[in-house]
Image (cartoon, rainbow, N blue to C red; front, side, top):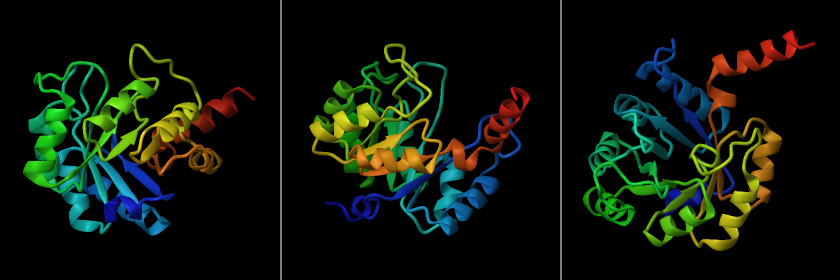
Length: 225
């Protein structure tokens, strides 16, 4: 077992991302958010964008899962090999990429992309999947981690308000690659449930690092009193 992956076992990874046009969408802000997450006990950081990845890698001594959201196609999480190589070279220890069944914009297969990342950069690969079949295929293609990140975010899966713990459990029981629970995990209880379902580690983003959404939860609940 890779030492970096072993260090994430049963631990929390905090996703430090802001959306375009938001006040927090600067590399320095995300660097500070990552530092705060590290002080709070995060075992790893997930970050988006080359500048953010570089800033966080310089400041935070934790495993860094990096990605690059680009384009308007269905596949936009690190959509091509060139994106993946750039993410690794910016400082990510692990490159997260779309590993769904949808075609990749550069025409390369998932297996080709993962192999090139391994060979050319030495970085690990986290496969963001939406179904059991995709997770199985990603494991067979050489992914080092399988994430449930895209469950409910593809046209052929159903988005539910809760995390897809059934998918976590089915993947954990099927693949021999560590499964990372990610997506709509909003409470410590849900994170614990994900571990009990078989998750190797858990990624939490919005509920920790996105004040606009968290504020909206409170405001909406109070307005509906």
